[in-house]
Image: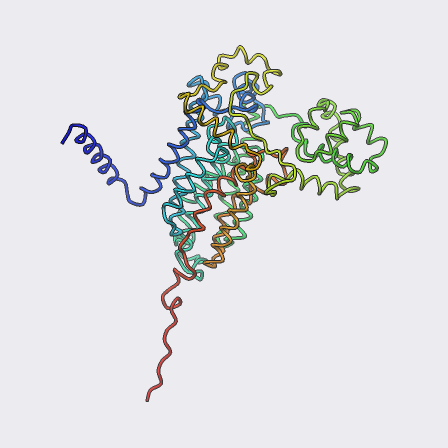
Length: 513
């Protein structure tokens, strides 16, 4: 035997020995997690230390210059600050995001296996997630939405474990209150991870608590006998966020954003109503609007109901803050006089949450290449050019060839005709619902619908409060929708776990002669 073959054989034996030490129930989840880790590390190496947006530069400015403002996730600002302070780059943060998402996907794979799904279908869904340019590169962005999605995937994985265990016993026993350690009540580990995922959702976005609350309502409708546990894993994350936001952060010197930043949706609704029904506005109302922006701006930009950025760009923000109470009174009056316009604007702005192929598709796709001016952010804060962290604010790929290949693939994914499937969060959200409904009809257990709770909460949250048709707002339902596909191949059957006496009818007794 040649030395090369001997070395190869020895290496294979060492791998087999290490694998044998891993419990059999953990081998598949760890293998899937390793697959996800390798795939995301390729994207990470191609765009090292990470992909950046306008918000990435905003995080850097706020956290490194002492301007801690509660307009973004303070939790994520702290993560950016720690990464820059420890390593001088974003690499530590983005690497942590890669590891976190990989572990969440591996954990989810273990839950899906409880539905009697062949491993190849689970692996195939993970490969699709890694290959698609919309989800493959997303995890390496310096964006608060990344841990938001990781928390959602972790929560979905916990629900897969909880529901998978619940299906192991008959329906008649699922409300057993005498022994709450039965599979129908789920393992404590999985409930803790569900609470951890929902806490990460709350900490990553300031409106994440609304998504958590809506997800909790959906869970209660599907598994009402678990209302106490559902209440604990939803209320505690919300309380943690509220305690930090209202008490801890202000005590640490974090400042609140102006009223203008938090009320752009109301101003956009006023503008849309003015563009469609100007007759409901009095001369005094029009004078109020004119003190903030020209009436022509209210009318032209207000007619664009898909987003709020265009309207806000022409505002006198100080005047809007000064007249905020009057504007809110005008908003309520406009809703009363023209309710149809308000409903129309809500459905239009909520397009990313429900439309598979919207008539005006402007899904925001951030360029993967670095912007020399921080995507116009430097224009407002040129002091960042002298920041010691400015060298880190550029993509420096670890492999030029890998960078070119990933960049080409990413740009190819922006083909307009494929936008609805590659970037459509609503598309994959509906796909996921259809798969869960089909499985519910197949085995006739409504617990399966509980796995849609996270997507429902995220989708409704986007519908009621989204500033524009951006992919990242529906990224969580996108990830969950792709990872739900293996459930279409579940081999579970109706009454499969019912007692034998119920599952198989007994023969009728024969009359005695």
